[in-house]
Length: 309
Image (cartoon, rainbow, N blue to C red; front, top):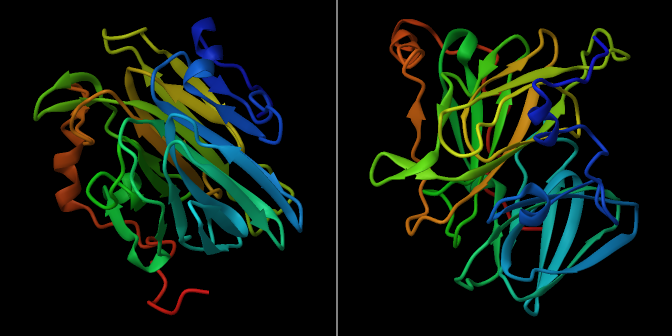
């Protein structure tokens, strides 16, 4: 499978293959300006051993999340030491929250890759450390729709101004983000208006380490917003922008577990993740009651409580 095409042509602006949205020190740099929306941002920062990077938060709040490696995050007169992880498939990471209108330095003695998830906001909250052992691990779905969600910055798990961020791990062969759902209308108590970024990493196959893993992402128009329509083959380092539309499924190819980082933000007064399922597929949730959760899950849990490094 070598094709990297998406269709129709509109989708090419929403599927960002690895390296196609690089800028400066970032291998991925998605801003409200580049995405053509109002709030959500995501950067991926690689650092060589001993490397560091300083940035201004501007009008956005940010979470620094290690994807691979460990780092120190200095902001607001404090330094947060993040023990991180070897990879997104190895365990949950601790993280650091930094406010708008601040200067932040990320430094890594051993090197690594670090996600900077951001959202424009009005409130200026204090800089904080997020311990890995306090991240709530949730198993969603059942059978071939089983997946793991690491709710490190879910709306009900961590305080922020507008930013919502979670990690999803899908075992090879399974479908996640299913049934297709949307959050492109402000319907109080029913649905939130949220811009969303998916960032993907695909695990190698232990029995065939030279094989490149792939996954697939579908987004279909909902009749609201721009009419986003994407059918993308995704690989490690790819991203998909979802300003609107029914998103799902996210499909992990057999033999290759899939990871994606979801970053969301929107204009609503309430920071909440409220979704509407596609009416043709909402019935699938009812079928899960009679199916077991995939026994491969959880791929890992939160680490035991211990002293901070």
